[in-house]
Amino acid sequence: DSMIDADIQDGDMVIVEPGIPKHGDIVAALIDGETTLKRLVKQGSKVYLKAENKKYPNP
Image (cartoon, rainbow, N blue to C red; front, side, top):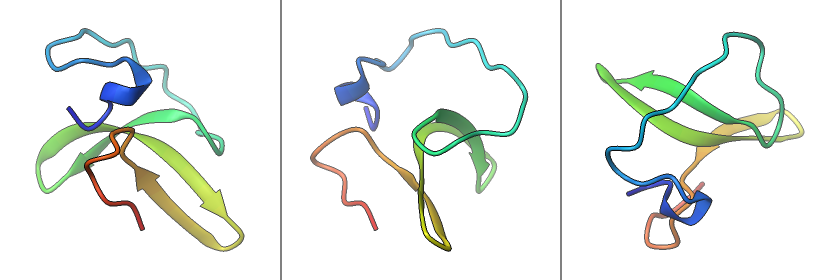
């Protein structure tokens, strides 16, 4: 449910296009052996993945 505010629900099917993501893109990432969808945020030299659910903290 980390992407619920982007209208992506648990169990939804997604299509992933390989490429170099840009700031603001939704990306699929492999973290600790699990695949997750998150928003890519680039702020100066800082890059992080952001949940689209207000109940999850973001950096």
